[in-house]
Image (cartoon, rainbow, N blue to C red; front, side, top):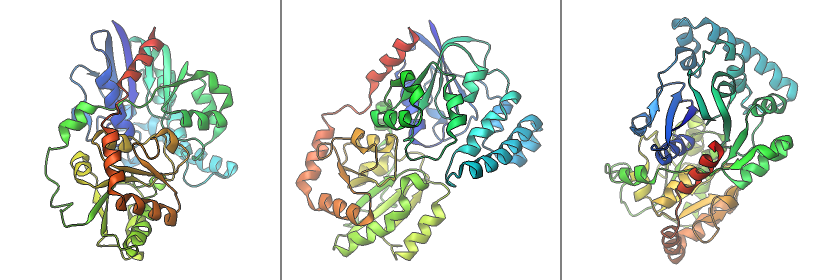
Length: 398
């Protein structure tokens, strides 16, 4: 049997994490022995790791990242603590030097770089393939023995603020770089043209069996009541990329058009207070409802009328794919990678990103019941799991 290692951070709720479950579900375990290493054995999706996947033990040094510094001190992980403090200082200087936006990943990247020397080997096994599923990608490059190594891109690099010089050194250590869409590849190569030959297109593999098994797990009537309103739903982290802070204004414009809508938001994150402030400013307290973090979002998708992804940017939205698997009409904004997400007018609708244009586009779909039904029927003809993508990984292994 071939040996494969997959490395990731944790299994909290998120699109990339769901795609990781899909990858784990799809690998042929009769041909491949799969070890999964998570930095932290945390997250709502942890119980859904397939039983034939070997979850490696948690290692204290790796578990000391992405947690408060006080926890690291209590664990007496002084090497990791020193590395994280050094990274914080270096990141501040680097952001100022490069004049990067406040919304950047330099701090996260350097926290991995400067703690690297404190990290032990992840395993004594020499693998046929080692996969680093989430950036930063330092640890698999340096702390895993493997014949081939591959790192994943999950985001649109034309929209993120990064330290190009540092990231190039990181990516260059890999034999292959997996991109989840052609648009993601294009944006990545525009930033790192020298890495073009390493790119392999491997779209997100979604766990359809898992998704469909969860849609009737419980009733959401108390949270999304059948009160005659048109139920819109959006799912994602409360962050700049998802653009949920503009939902209250878009919703207000729909109300002003005479549409009886309620817009539900599932997620969590640093922008929650900003979103609440925008809801208050727009006086949409009765119309925009924050449902919070949900371990199982699928019953909510099942009862919504239309799923909306109003993002500023995406790599390839897993939540959109999940809604299409559940056969819902889907609307997304015209972010740069939207064309790779769906066929406009066939299995979803792409609307302008500005609030006025977005509201007008959403209103057109709401008012066109025939279009909604056509979108639903067309999703039934498509396979959104991308299960065949696993063959590309087999080819890389050889």
